[in-house]
Image 1: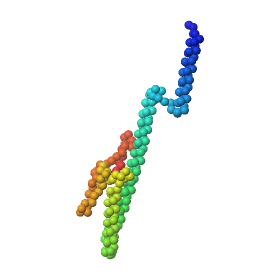
Image 2: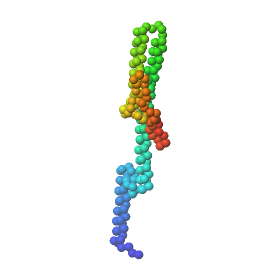
Image 3: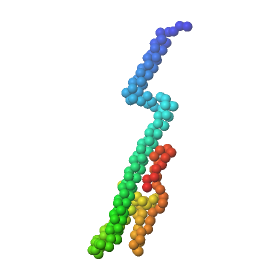
Image 4: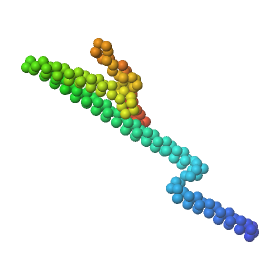
Length: 176
């Protein structure tokens, strides 16, 4: 079998062209830092890359959710701590008022302070979070959870629904 000069040059030119194309593609991969430029480069690798990108997005979302849950629970804990402090102060004042050695003016002063504590606790029980939702209303986040009745008593307007946020594939945490 004879190889003509034109066949030889044609084969050599094709090989050089393919080698140049491969070199250019490799250079592009190096400069971009990515081995897979298109799905045609590696279909299985491209599918895996897409799956990893989706997982990365989910992990970013879960991280944000964990931060939100932590902030929400810290804020609730702070409000509950303030309510506890107010109730402890009211207990101190009640014990002080029970002392027969204090005057009526002192008792009036104590009653006034207890009234202020009552208003403070009522306001704290109707606290809103950073999103403007009522913290202790369950799923009725736009309704104040506690209301004062005409007779001076209080009633709960919320519900017992516990709101939660997904923080992993298998775990969701309560936010209220």
